[in-house]
Length: 203
Image (tube, rainbow, N blue to C red; front, side):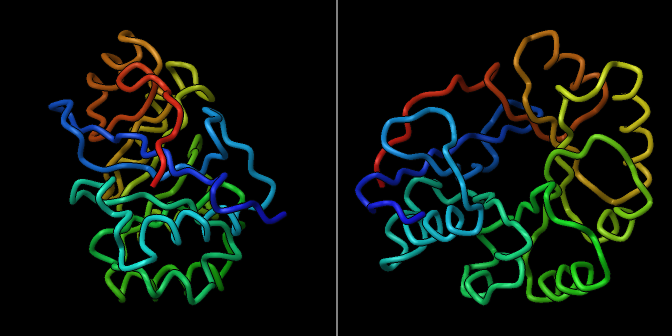
């Protein structure tokens, strides 16, 4: 469903490093002053984010402060030529968990890597064999903390450390959770503990 451009906002959620400095932003699609997402079409939402941040001469990129922007990408957008028009040095393509991994997806990700794009995998909570080829291609894996207990989290971190990846702890919602992820040597952090939600600004 199409939404009026005046209703669309981009909420830049910070991604922080181990020194708690902002290292990147995830560019979240929002409507009006809503804090939570209201998305019925992932590809359309991504397209609207791209238009606001990277369209019109790229004036919206000021929200990134010169840092990389994580853009959510579903299977439809992954194969879209829209992706190839983005400045690869300023973008991290974040593959949504809805993307079904097959040979075609793996080949597309390899092609985008050759073009200079960085890839992140969203909401990872296990190391299934089907994802192994993407672990070899991805730069960053976002681990969904809310889906894992302490034992399973440790097991997943050990498994992922076999690959040349940066680990991003997402949904860090308390100081205890943040410290746990620091102890497990996560590289990047994202969540309400660091940055409580606020209404998305206009771009």
